[in-house]
Image 1: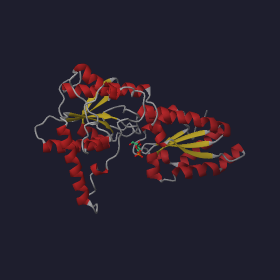
Image 2: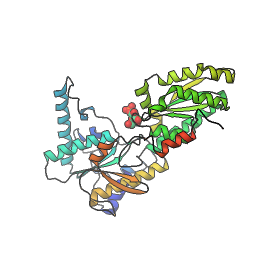
Image 3: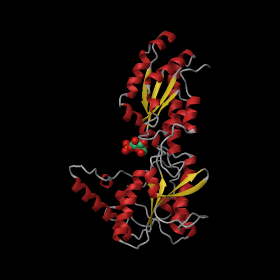
Image 4: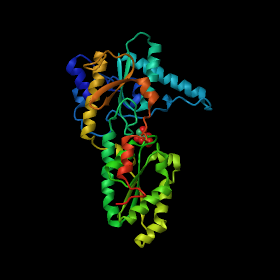
Length: 362
Ligand code: F6P
């Protein structure tokens, strides 16, 4: 918000930026002249170091497309229609020409529906959606990194480092559950960066195999590993059973070969980083990324292109590839998201090299 505001104003001081509060809810309620107004520098002052969003956010059930067999299908469709109409009228009344949406694919689906309602109600009026990738899951097509991911990654690695103190002293195994419903980016990279012994991610089924994990831990105990960190993504618990971590902890504590080698059972504990990963001051890299992408969104809104690019038509998302800013049609982003971790990727293969293996000979 700060980067978009500063870039817009730097180029054209008369250009106005409005902030709609509490996500799409803020777009579809009665407008309030005190808060729904063009913002000035004070509104985005002193926010660069703050976690969360002072703007507010939230999921809007009315925007989800109900399943065709929902018992209350008619009412839900009517509620969705009403929500979209009010949002379209509010955007028209506030003369918004570019709607910048920060979020993941769910937010972009909502924005696309709002854009369709707008175009249907006010045909021919200039209007476009510009998406900014913002999700700790880092699973959007059209960008290598999403805003918030690096902060969450650092928070999880910080938690792993703190957990090491206990498990090293007590010679324990720790199973750490981290967010990531469909994609394992956060689990995989935090496990790599935190030096975990193993990681389980939703995309690669073999990583959930508890027989294999136990074989690996036995190899580790033989090699005098003092403790084990096993990172598991939330999505694995959804697919392999909510008690996946409890089952693994029990198996570690009762594994006869481990008891024989150590002369006692190895204790196992389960921890969850949960929403803690999403909070706190943004990392420097996230601030930089938000700056780069916020300014790029301003370019698209004002110039209809990136600062040094070709004209861009339609609804888009700005993202990064390497150090470059790229623009991808919003439909394509939605169609190809979530972007999953591939088994053949260098990053996943790295986890095999750096983590404990059952046949480890060193
Ligand atoms: O989509 C991002 C995400 O952080 C997921 O990893 C997680 O499953 C979900 O949000 C949690 O959402 P909520 O805060 O609504 O529980």
